[in-house]
Image 1 (tube, rainbow, N blue to C red):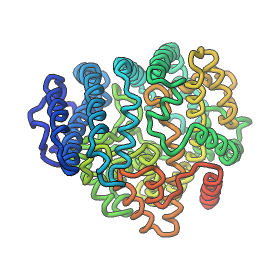
Image 2 (image 1 turned 135 degrees about the horizontal axis):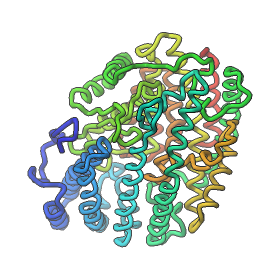
Image 3 (image 1 turned 45 degrees about the horizontal axis):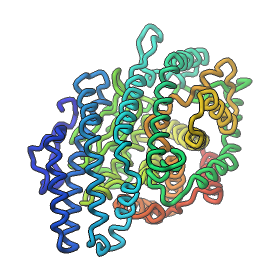
Image 4 (image 1 turned 120 degrees about the horizontal axis):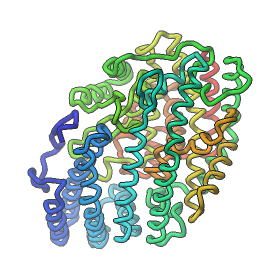
Length: 576
């Protein structure tokens, strides 16, 4: 599709199984590939034959995944483009529903193969475990429900990406309004915040309608698979083999005990420095000494150049990877109207190359996002050697260690963007942001625990559950006069709509990243080497082993949270 900045890319390895001219958007051309795989499975006479069959299956999966990714990237880069939207919807409506039952059949064939038990261990341990869960959960009647779920998610993104406000005589996207929240002029901040908040509120009924439909679909999906609620189903479906809902609840408690006191201290400091009687929602992003907002760059090209300089100073391999992304046009970073909100890294699985999407508008947050998504990209590049498609991706809990570690490691060289004084301001902003995000993660995760363990709940009960969590984790911000905004604040969190239960991973991973950072303070070269070694494992080992390879403990109890919060507190004390 010509809408893509990177155009056509060569496959990392020449195709051996999928014909080069196959139209991967046409089910009639895809279906024979599954037929051939099914036939070949019965021809395997030795373990090496089964391994070769798995490589062929991986090649097909990578080609299909890249086709899906290309269409998703085009759609999110150009939400108003009818061709891009139609191509994406065609794939999720006419290809994906057909893929699922055929993939399920291949998984059944794999599990039934007598040679499977002779595959070398621990090489296939994680793959085997994951396939068993897929087969256990698959229900043909869920395929159309999942298609409908994807369509609703696309509609949510389309609505979110289309929102604009008239401000100071100009039409602005909501991300373009964010810089005003860092302006020293408090009435201007309030005006900008209210304009954005009220614009979202105007669509609250639509957001609620989307979500009601999504919840119904998800509850039915769980019921069809034999689970009493979607919470239990989701933990199984997300492959959470190494922790439980109860562990997440303990994590929420640890955040309440170890992080909330620090958050309240930071908020009290902010209120005193701003000399205001109470912190209001528009007071949370501005510099507390009312200095002008940090402006790390004016043009996106400057951000790219300075980020490259950071990686040049940090590590040769990382620097080379980022240079490759520039050369191959694998970056779309500037905000514009009609572009979906947020940022992500998507892997083009056949080329085995990463693509980064974001909405940069010249804020320090953009620098953090750039480093974050680059960490994901380095993860993708570190697994290019892996021929088993399933292992080129890791569990989200570790994928986010890759990205969040890069934020902390890269922050050491922020002088590429700033004067020493402003670099310290940015470091303080980032560390305070870590303290701030933990309670938000707990809120979003606990909210979803409540939603999906209360099947059939109504909107009023859901809103009350949200408000109860805001009281627990919201800190000391005064929302008087904006109670409706507070009650609907979760509408802005796309994960709740698009990726149910995908959020606590950020908290678990942040603990891992803080441990990588702590290790770097003792021996930077070893910490980065361990980090890269862990990235190269992809998803081939269970989570505790991936964390261990990176020099971290896979634990998110108060015992782990407490010393890491003390480290952050110590580092903050060094900054002005």
